[in-house]
Every structure is written in C-alpha cells, then in structure tokens.
Image 1: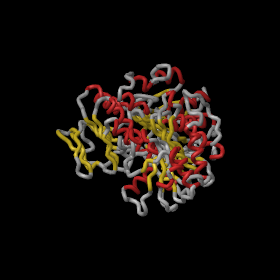
Image 2 (image 1 turned 180 degrees about the vertical axis):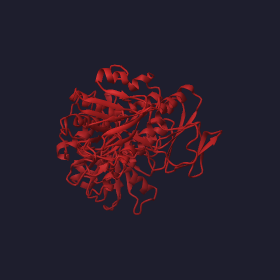
Image 3 (image 1 turned 60 degrees about the vertical axis):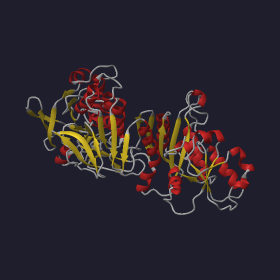
Image 4 (image 1 turned 120 degrees about the vertical axis):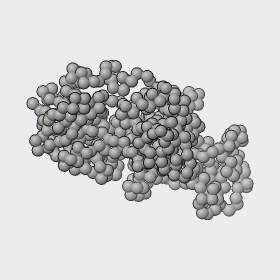
Length: 565
C-alpha cells in the first residue's frame, strides 16, 4: 500500500489528495489540515464579505452543493482528512509526520511513503506600530472572512482603511464600499495593482475614486491609532490622520515554509520550496504545491512566487499524480495571468508588463495601447483599454486590459497566444469567433495586433498619455508639441482634455494644413477618442512632409487624468 500524506487541505492539498486517490485506489491518502475547514474557495472570500452571496457554506462546497468536510472526503473521495490538526514536524529519515489535534491536544506520528506539502502562504504583516489592536485583520482564512462579514452585516463600522493596493486590497475595498462602508485604500507604491503598468492602473484608480473609494498612493502607514485597545484610525507617513473603525492588512503574502525548512528542504530566493517540473522537492519522496512553492516563469526562465488559486490547483493535480504513479506528470511554470473585478471594471494581465520586462533585462521590446469598444454600439458596447508587449522577435510576451467590457476573454485569448509563442504575424489574422452580440468584426485583441504591426512597420510613432501629460506639465525637457484633436466639434464640446489642444476635425485636415506650423520638423501629437482618427491624421501629416508626428495611443479613452466635461 502506498501511504500518501498531504499537509494542507486548501486548494493544492485537496486537489493533490483527490488526484492521488483517483489514480491509485489502493493508496492510503491522508490530509492533515490545521483549519477546521477543507477545500476552501479562498478567492471567493471578498464576495461573501460583500454580500454578493449569503450562503457561507458555498465557500466549502462542491459544485453540487455538498459541503466538503471530513465526512465528504472519507465517503466520496476515499481520503482520510484530519481537520483541526497541526503538522508539527517532518522526520524525513523515519518518513513520518508528527501532528497534534488542536481540539484534544493529543499528538501522533503519521507514516508516509510519499509526502505532499501544501501549507499555502501567510499574510505579510508590516511592522506598523499598533498593528495588534482589535479591529485590524487580514483576509486569509474563514475566520477573517467571518469577521469582515459581521462588520458588513452589523453596520457598526462606517469607515475602514485597507492597507495595500494589490488584488486582495482592491477586492476588499470594492466589496466594503459596495456594502455602504466608506473605504480609504492606502498604497505605499505609486500605483495600485502592480501587475499593470501605471497608465492602466491609473485608469482603474480613477474608476475606484468615481465609485467613492478614496485611494491614496505613494504614502505608507506610519502607525495605527487606538482607543481602549481598538483601532480608531491610521496616521500616514505624511502626517495625515484617517479615522476608521476597522482596518484590513492586504500587503501580500509569503510562503509558509517553516516545516519544510526544518525538514532540510531547499528553499528558493523568495523563501518558497524549490521544486522541479514534477513538483518534487530536494528530497525525492516529498512533493510540494501551491502558495508554499516557487515555480519558473515561462517568459524569463527565472523562479517566481505566484500565489494564485488556479496555479495551486494545477500544481496539486501534478503533485498528486506523481505521488501516486511516479514522475509522469509535469508542471512547466507560469505566464503570470491574473484578473480581478473592480466595481464595473475588470482588470487583467498575462505575460510580462513593461516594468517586468525591463526588470528582467529583456531588450528591444515594443508596446502599444489600444482603446476600442468590445462590441458594436448597437449591441451595448463597453470600452476596453489594453496594452500589448512584443519582444525583439515580434513574439507576444505581455498583454494587459482594463475597462467595463469583457476583459476576461481578451486576457484568455492573449494567454493562449503567449503560451503558444505566437508572433504578431500570427495574430493579425487570428480566426476568433465573431457575432455582434460578442465582439466587433475585428476583435479588440486583433485590433491591438494590427496597431502593433503598423507601429513595427514604421507607419506611426506612438506616445503614451503619461508622456503627453509630463510634457504639458513641464516635467519633460524640450519643445512642447502641438496637440491635434481630430474629433468633431460636437465631441469636443461634450468632453475635452483642456491641455492646450487644437481642434481640427479629421475631415477638414487636408484643407486646413496652412493652420499648422510651417516648420515641418515641429512636434505634433495627434489623437481623438481612441486615436484611430489620430493615426489617420498622422498619416496625412507625414505624407505632407511633417517629420516629427506622433500618435497618442489609446486616445481620450485611455487618458488617465481629469477631463473637462
């Protein structure tokens, strides 16, 4: 009999145990789980907190509605699950795990032939004075979830500060604001959602502000203020004080690897367990999966820490199969895909951002920004703003998308293109499904590839909204360009940037060239709502001898600063 012990019963551990038993019915599979719950849908925690659904049991239930407790695992999966049981140590020489029942206090040794570590991650708790006060929580387990749900239901707290602007911080801010609680989100970096580049992150930040969330970036929390042992506010590093009745620490997570380290397993540079493609640790009989491991980036080849629920399930499946059958399944790595809901927006990315590519030392990459509807206007179009990144060989290596349109489909399409190592020449004629209820005739993703193809061919020179803003504000040296708005007069009167632009509708441009600088080397930036007309204007000017013409990519739709309406 193959004795397989799994430490950890959340995403990776539960999947590993179930996969191992399915492939080897004769195996004795045991889960050791510190929490009282098993197979928790941790990514659903914020939405239960916010009242998007009220059935708490749905977080620990199978798709059929059956609660996945120890009885369920025993009867349906053939797996023995020891809940409220903490693994204390691993004796790899004797091949046994010492554990303690947290209810009775009794200890026992559980032998194994194959061991799978799936202990997950622990919340990062910044060393902020006052962090132990009552009312300060994370959102990493069911107890945290229950606490925040009570805040939402009891309506005794009217203001919450969220510390951290990553995925969890943004999701928590949304659901609490949605519940009628005033939220201030504080992020020490210069932007929220660090998987996005700054312009797209700024668009999401604008949307959050419009929904009532106060977003403060580039300032950290200096201390938590308290009254009678409970949090009463935060003092920021710039001296500002914000009153609150509760605070959520969402400053990321770190691998939970104390057991592995004490057992002598090799750890990587991020502190996660080092595994090979079989999810096998430095000790051949011990596998590891989920948020406690480091995995390769398929785009840089370097190890990364990627604590994502989908990856944990995939890794757990591989670890379980190999523990049961020997090393026959592999997990190659990640391309860094992710997405989140932010009120009416979605925000997602796959592959490398421009910041990540630069940090990885990738040379000669090119980016473009595309803004367009997700479907025809007569079918209820919603905007999408995306950023595409290709390497020097014109291979797609990164894609980001935000907006109220169907971001998920755009990211999924790009993710498969990146994994398939497709180039722009492959993407410009992609045969994607089309009908007006679902997309434009030229889908947003394909249109981004067309823009990239034009840019690579030298048909236009792009400039980002951020660069234009810095020029207008005098933050960049050199001549300020003529800003040419190619929209109609009606569009201009309804909304404009008001940064000194000149309105010159595209239909009148050829007849009004005399109104432009006679110096053909003068700097000109063309744009419109999405910069399709901006591109056409640039082509006209270039054909008429202008040599320093650029297109503001994405146009007004991708402008992340205030407009005049």
